[in-house]
Image (cartoon, rainbow, N blue to C red; front, side, top):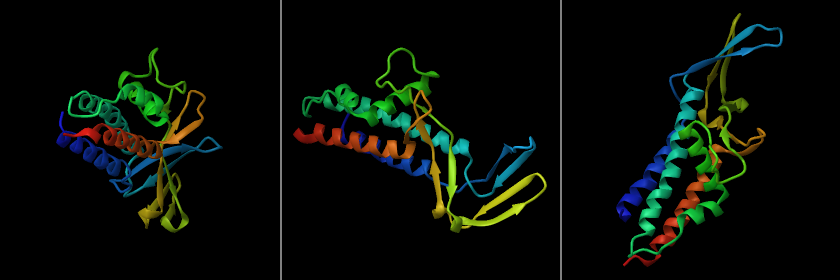
Length: 194
């Protein structure tokens, strides 16, 4: 493990962060059941699907967690400052939640050992469009088409929820804070570079 590989790792995290928050896409539709029992289809052309956003968020969470192993290898080299990365992760709520999320996603749920008491999982993706961002609304018998005129007016949200379905973080906020923690660890490790 060398500093170039660590630099590439953090560049990857930056690209994954950017990719996870892209809003434009091929368009998608989803169904909603109304109070009267009928089904209405919502179509949103030019937006990414909820599944695509969630896939990219999962990739980001897993790479944040993988970064711990890179930093452990770096910290164990004699020319760098030794830091117990596992202890540092356990002291960071953001990194601990990312660890539990990544392990739960990787293994189909968490087993006995967890870093937090939250048993975190991802909720459902949502788009929140401010009024100025809506281009047109077209109402049909069983379909509503929403076109977006300004993607800057669209917020993407993906909650990280606990075992009681209470929101802990928005995944993008969590990932930003976790990456900041990883950057701090990298800085501490690289203090004694010879």
